[in-house]
Amino acid sequence: MLFTLLESLPADLERALQALRQRIAAWDQVVVAYSGGVDSALVAALAVEALQERALAITGVSPALAPHLRQEARAQAAWLGLRHQELATAELADPAYAANPADRCYACKRELHRLLAPIAAAAGAAVVLDGVNRDDLGDHRPGIRAAREYGVRSPLAELGVDKAGVRRISRALGLPWWDKPAQPCLASRFPYGEPITAARLERVAAAEDWLRQQGFQALRVRSQGETARIELPADRLPDVLTRLAVGGLREALVEAFAELGFSAVGLDLEGLVSGKLNRGLAEPQALQMPAQDQAINDGMIQQAP
Image 1 (spheres, rainbow, N blue to C red):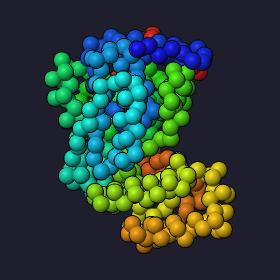
Image 2: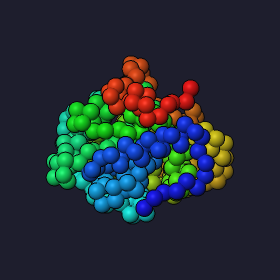
Image 3: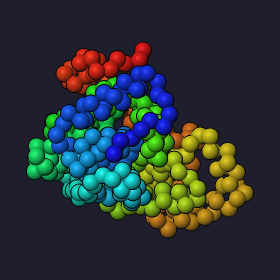
Image 4: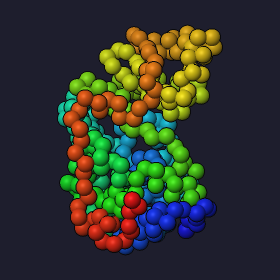
C-alpha cells in the first residue's frame, strides 16, 4: 500500500513526510502505541505503508478509553489494512494513577509500555513507536518520560512535525479522520488530586456520549466532585444557550445527568479549552528529543522558521 498525495503540501511538510517515510522504513519491525488519535494514526499509516505485516498497532484498553474511541480505533485500523490488537491495561490498580497526582500520565504510560515491551521483543526486537508530536514537548506530558524510559521512539517529534502538520499531512494522504477532534483519555476530566475509579470514568463516558447524541462532537464533561461542568467550543455557545433556553435541551440534559448520578450540571462559558485542568501547575519545561534523534541535527529536514 502506498498513500499518494491527493493535494500538494508546503515544501517543509513535503520534506517532513519524506523523512518520516525514510525513518520508519529503516526499522525492520515496529509496534505502534496506537490510540486511534490523529497523531498515532498517521504513524500507524506510514508504518503499514512501509512495513506491511511487519507493523503492528496496539491499543491499550481500560475504563479510561471512551468506548466510541475504541470503536473508531478498530475501524481506522481496518481501513488502513493494519494488524491491530487490543491490550488490557491495569493502571487503575496503581495508586500512583488512581490517586490522580499531577504526574498521573506517567503511571499510565509506564503501565502501557511495561506491557508493550515484551510484545515488541517477541516480534523480533521491534521498535515501539508513539504519536507524540512537537507541540507535545512543550505541554504537561509526564507520559513522555515513561516512554523514553522504555526506549520508545517518537518519529513525529523527532522530525519536528507539530499538530497542524500532522493534520495537513493526514488530509493530503486522504486519511478520512484528519480533522478528528483531540480526545485525551477520560482521566483528564478530573481535577488533580480527585481520585479516579472505573465507575467515575464510566459515568463521564456516558455523559459525553449523551451529548454526542445531541449533535455535539468536540466536548468535555469535567467531573468535579458530583458536579458536571460541560465544555463546548466557544463558537457553539450562542446556539447552545438558545437551545437551553427555548429548545428543551436544559430539562433533558439535567434529567439525563441526574440519572447518571451528578448532583449538578453547568456550562463553562469560556468554552472548550484543551488541558484546562493543567492550569495552576508549574509552567512545563519544554522537553527536547535526544540530540541524535532530532532531524535538525541529522539533516533529514529543515524546520520552517
